[in-house]
Image (tube, rainbow, N blue to C red):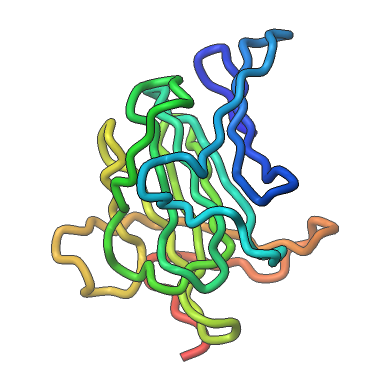
Length: 185
């Protein structure tokens, strides 16, 4: 779920494997829905495969644009952004960085208090993947890649602290400077 502009948004898979987005005005407005499998060219590759890794993540940025990433377990980036603020019926598939987006799993959006959207994911196979943290620049979803040093000349690295926790909330591994953290290789 995500909240923005006095509205609440949620995504879920229905019994047919289609990804549905819902929106309602807070606090108690009626839900309206849209089937994301009907987006032109089906960029989220729906219906979803029967694999519990294929979760969906949603965030609403400070300008009201809705971002959804879904249906990835070692797959190329599957991401859409609303064409208009707070509109769940019109979508575009703008891509992100084009780098390190070939085998994505565990995708999650996060919103910084200043309105910046972050996108965290693993690219690569289990045990041999790298964590990446993309940072949105500007209103229309341009992102900087946080990954292996030297991959992008225009990338300005900022220190980021990520804590990986187990289900009980215990810290497993603190990772400083995710932008240069490499694992399993």
